[in-house]
Length: 117
Image (cartoon, rainbow, N blue to C red; front, side, top):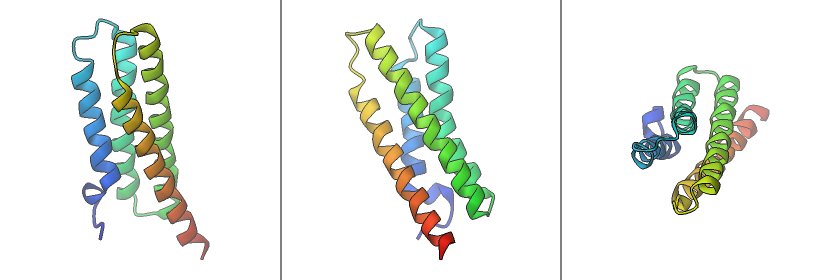
C-alpha cells in the first residue's frame, strides 16, 4: 500500500532518472540544453510529490499530468542531444523516460476511474 509519495515506484524511478541525467551530463558544455534537461527531469518527481501532498484527487491528476508533460519534454531534449552528439548512447535514459510516462498514464487513468465511480 502506498502511504506517501516516497513509497511510489514512479516517484522513486523518476528521482533516479533525475540523478542519472545529472550524472550523464555533468561534464557537458552544452549548458542550455543540459540545464533544460536537468530542470525537466527534476520536475517529474517534484510534481508527483506536490500532487500527492495536496490531498485532492483532481489536483493529484493535474500535477501527474504536469509530470507526464515534463517527461515528454525531457525525452524530446534527449532526442535533440542524441542528434547533436551522435556518438553518445542515451537510449537507456530515453527508455526510462518512456516507462515512467507509461506509469504516470496508468496512475492517472486509475485515479480518473476512482473519481468517476
